[in-house]
Image (cartoon, rainbow over all chains, first blue to last red; front, side, top):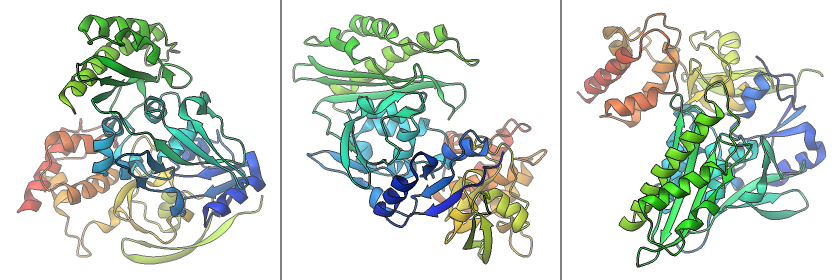
Length: 292
Length: 160
């Protein structure tokens, strides 16, 4: 229950951190909030030989909110900072709604958005939100920078597209269209536990209340976030009805492949996912109509 | 591998400490073994139980999920720093005593640190808010009701 020995280096700048990662590659891990990495190190499931602490780097922290353009969130921004950002909450109600579901206040005081996305836990909320919000992720190495869509970033359980010399530095969120309502819901055995199933739903209406776009992304029911937005094609060009919501939920249930666990069988996870989908879509639709 | 040692300087309950720690030393173990502040309890060592909660620059964090070396330059508060030097309880400690908010007491240091920070920010909390704030601290004895009662009483007494 104690970490194996490693060499600790506190990076003094982004360039310093990237140079260290380039030098040490897979042997090294970035230490962000540490709320996932430290438990795995305590259990010795992870045994990095070099730990590059990036907590002292201000360049990759903070929220840059734009009224018209994309909003940029530094990868080292802690959940607590996001939770306390009223403007961010107003711009992205989905984030405001999901944050209290993430672990506990003590964990959110340390945990970071970027660290969470790079850990890529299948049951984690933020990867699903990043996909639902069509986030773009800025990836940097000491020699290159590139952008990747969140939907292409997650490759499997605890697996991302990050290369050994790379760091996720910025999460960019495009602005939501007008008359977009969203809702995040999850069911967990205990408050703060990983979800048996969770869903992020978004609905965009035109002036006649006709659906012109919808998003539906699950967490906890597959190896990575499951984008079941195609199920919402049923809504397109229609005024959303209760029956259509039930039909979309039934379709979505067939698009997920939950693994089941001691806490919940796969059938139960699928059932919960269906119920949550109906509720979340109903709420998102209501919010879109009410202009929330 | 040779021990990877680092010099650190931090304050704990207002007192300055300088020390040399191995990089893999957890903050919880640094407090308990090096500083002999064994009031911070260690339960699960993977961030679930909350017994090891301390304040890092005033904010509750899991000391089992931080390295001691990461506390360099920061201010840590532990259970030992709550009561006055003369031994007078804080309103929260007194309320926990009055309401029998503990039985075996193992989880209590983490709960006191968590809820001390919570009361700093929430002068008039609802019972739901108290339970939400408590959700990251496991207690297997009390059933939580007396802890919730204690926090509500402490908040009321602190409002005066």
